Amino acid sequence: MMAKKKKSALITGGAGFIGSFLAEDLLERGYKVYAVDNLSTGSLDNIEHLQANPNFTFEVGSIIDEELMEEMVIASDMIFHLAAAVGVKLIIEKPVDTIETNVLGTEIMLHLANKHDKSILITSTSEVYGKNEKVPFKENDDSVYGPTSKSRWSYACSKAVDEFLALAYYHEKKLPVVIVRLFNTIGPRQTGQYGMVVPTFVKQALLGHDITVYSDGKQTRCFTDVRDVTGSLIDLINNRKAYGEVFNIGNNIDISIVKLAETIRKMTGSGSKIIYVPYDKAYEKGFEDMRKRLPDISKAKSLIGFQPRIKLEETLVDIIEYYKK
Image 1 (cartoon, rainbow, N blue to C red):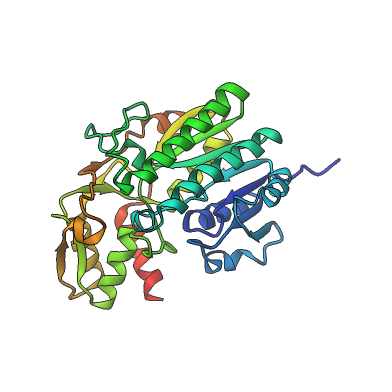
Image 2: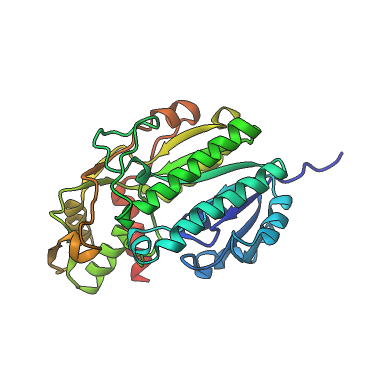
């Protein structure tokens, strides 16, 4: 009897924080994994423990390199497209890279997936809801953006274009595509380099530096453990009913940023002061932000039974231990 062929998956952004956990999850489920990353925000340290696994193949390269990507797409049964310019700080500092990577890179991946008849999952972001104040956000709610003169909105718009393009491929070319809007995924290996709030607070607390809270700190966010996220991505791409659909993946419990800072300070036993920094000083003049960002996750729950299981405190313990090392 012939042995059953292993399922194989390509992860773009495979050395990134989420990509490395997704690779781990897929390998544990018996997949062969191909990963590509240009290491601009990803790191070889994230995948060092996977390199000896015969079912893991890693290439340093860009998703804009169509020749390389085509080889990897051909070798895979499905694609998880995670590669993107992320983090508010990076977006304001490098708006050209942000738009080109997010739009051009996604166009190349969709084109190749369609050419070689592969299913593809596109990771989008809660940012696409923009300044909409109607929470919790449902997948079919309106997007409300600020003016194009504020580079802060270029990320949200570039990801919205990715979504429009992915859905166009689904409707016009019948490409099996799933879109996932992620809400503040956190866990060990995440870097605070580009303004990610949890690793930033943890590092500040452990070093005894001031913990910098932007604005009045009363803005609320929800945080999802990366290990809850990766399973949902795999379940969605393997479910035909998910094709041509958009799903929120996040935690439906939120916390104010100042409460988050206080919690981290207490958990680290830090003597750090919490200080408040105006947005204008942190980013750019006239910077705009959302007061609340909370997902309605009923759609993912009804299709794949998605429900975050790991509590924020548990994830914070793991992140604190990771940074202590």
